Image: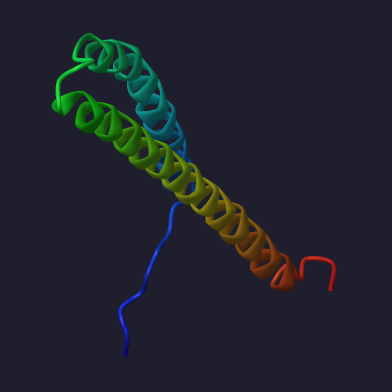
Length: 101
């Protein structure tokens, strides 16, 4: 017989909240480091590495944005799963509510 799996929707809600916060923090960090990094690249104009530094800044910015988007999607999935578990639990409880019989 398989083991019972118990899911606490509140735990899924907390995970969703943490993922949203992580996504927001990642986006904020990206913006925080972008300006000084671009300024550093500008300070290197005339040097061969200036373009490389600028390219790295924007490439990492793109990665940060993708990661923040991933965290938001993951948060939405956790929240949706929590809603589904609550609805399923409610439906199952209602099916066995035979007090009026």
